Length: 211
Ligand code: 5GP
Image (cartoon, rainbow, N blue to C red; front, side, top):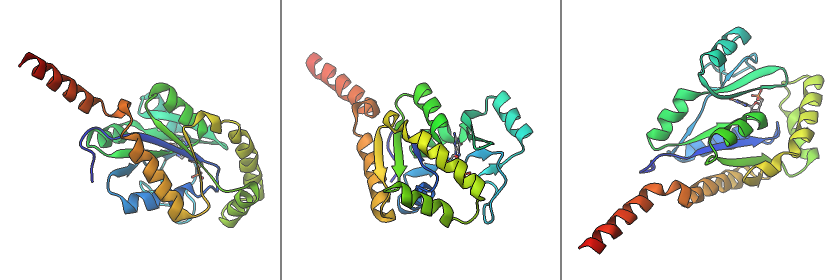
């Protein structure tokens, strides 16, 4: 069901190999209140990835044109490629009452947190580093060099988890998806996201006092 008011913006980050892509797909498939933002990237498509579904694949020049045109909510360079969130889609979907999910890395997440402090930030992690390495290799689409770069990056990212609101361990896809859903639903009940109801109650109380 869609929200009656404006949707919540949620950032989900996690180590490469944390399974966040799978969890997000499941979340979207199981609940119709969510919209997943499709990012733009200068990375080349992996086998099976589709334009406009996995990403909007752009050249570096095209990406830089989007930056100059202020078309992105945030952007970052990650392991040699640009990644960014197209602005328009996010705001339109939130206005429609959808909870919008940005599955983005840490630098982008911190930009969003600074610009939109009411954003909910969730960090997903596999249970331990061994599992993370196994999952990175398991994908089988990256070279050893890229895997090594991503492991190094993960070690740096671990230091920044403290800047997120929630940590969710992905030991089981179903349970993890349910935990993420519950966190977002509870966030709707925080007073900063219930301003419409608060305003209505205040108006009603004032009217009753006058009566
Ligand atoms: P991958 O190349 O594996 O698809 O993504 C690499 C990293 O970029 C992942 O951590 C992913 O969450 C992140 N990413 C994807 N889209 C965006 C985006 O729009 N902005 C930022 N900052 N990171 C993104």
